[in-house]
Length: 336
Image (tube, rainbow, N blue to C red; front, top):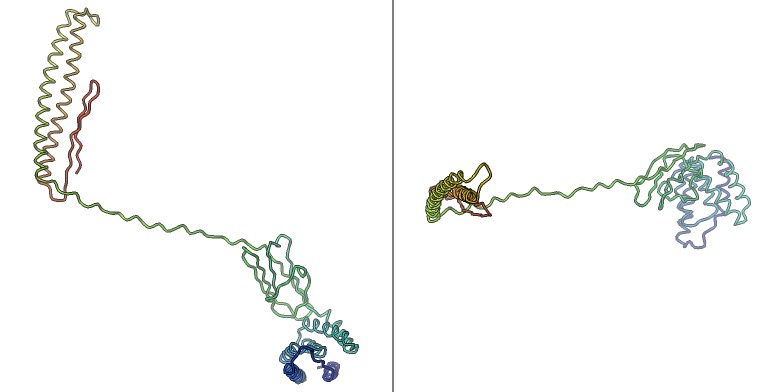
């Protein structure tokens, strides 16, 4: 410790002023802490001494304690803290009319100013989104201090920026103890990407329908007899178709003496019209006969198969008919 510093400490021991709001116990503890800080300062254990002075000042603020705290931080290399405390000590000394103490504090202020390290936090206009909050070492830096070279103690400093609905920004920068200058620029805070996960779709469950009921012997018998009956009707229709075709040919032959090419007399036209009608009838009867014979055969086959099939099989056969002018449609629909 320098001789001047020792003289200041000795001068301030007898001039400490208790804070009006401190209790008796707080004042006693503040005095004890101040004395312990002095002893630690003499032993050059500055970090421990500064902690004592700091707590003493918190309990019972006084111009003497804050001046000693500044001296301690100056010896400990925390120039920004010391510079701030010397300014506060000068203000309190001016208030108390202690011009000697004020001059001592201001002399340290002037000596420390060129040695201060400074940190500038730049917040560009494009970065200044709504709700932006900037912090240094956990304490908010107001808008008015943005882009200002702030005196800081040497060591690591963490700069943190947040805004509603934005990803936070954080960085740590190391500042030298003396005459250093560092700058941190706050970037545009990114908007978080929201990942939407589609709902999980469960694979469909395939339900196997129950096996159909087996065909009863009665149903199988009905199918066989129905098939025989349909085939018999079909044979009859084919016979009718043959008869109608023969009559159509006969009428056509009979019209030849009464027609020359496509020109016919009234008898020829009548005979040819009769031939066409009988030909159409033969076609309808022939088609119906073929369908009924085929359907009857299918019915008979399904009836025999249904009677011989295992219990897991089922047959459902339906005979369908339809008619339109000049056309007869028949069919068989079978389900197994």
